[in-house]
Image (cartoon, rainbow, N blue to C red; front, side, top):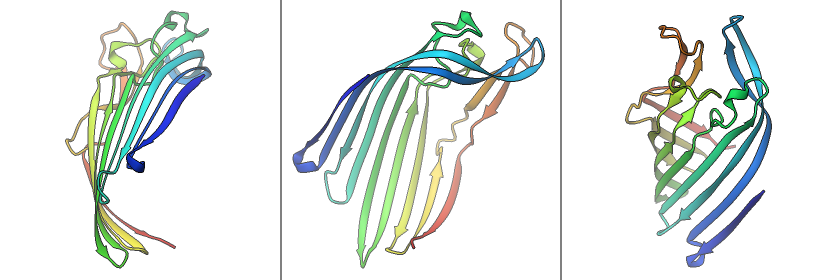
Length: 206
C-alpha cells in the first residue's frame, strides 16, 4: 500500500514529492554462517514488514543552479523467520532507518554547446544491522559521505575530475558474524568500504 503526491510550485522551478508506504516482503535471502557445521549458507527470512515515507525536493532558483534533496525513513521488521524464531521483531538486515541526500549542481555556459559543470553531493545513511539477530558486532553507526565532480562538457564529449568519500570516512560495507557470545578475534568477518578515492573520466557521445 502506498499513498503520495507530486507537486510543482513557482512555475515549475520547485518540485516537491512525498509518499507513505507499507509493504510486506517475502522470502528475503540472507547470507549466514552456521557454526555448528562451519557452513556458509543462504537462508530465507520468511516475511518482513516495511513501513516508511519519503520526500523528494528539486529546486532551480537560477538557470545555472540546481538543488536536489531527498529524505527517507524506513522501519523494516522481521515478522516471520522459521529458521530463527528468536529474531522475529528485530530490524531487517541491510535496511538503514534513515537515508538523506543533498545534491547541488552549478553550470557555467561557455557558448557553442560547451559548459563547465560543478557538482557536490552529501549522503547520510542511518544505523543499519548486517544480521537478523541485530548483534552489536554487526551494527554500523550512522555515516555521512561527501563527493564532488567537476566537468568540462561539449555536445560530443566530456572530461571530469571526481572525488568520493572526501572526508576519508572509514566504515564497514558488510559484517558477517561467525560466532556469537564468544570473545575471540575471529567472531566476525568485516568487509571495509573504499576509502577516499579520486579519478578522471573521459566520455564520448555517439
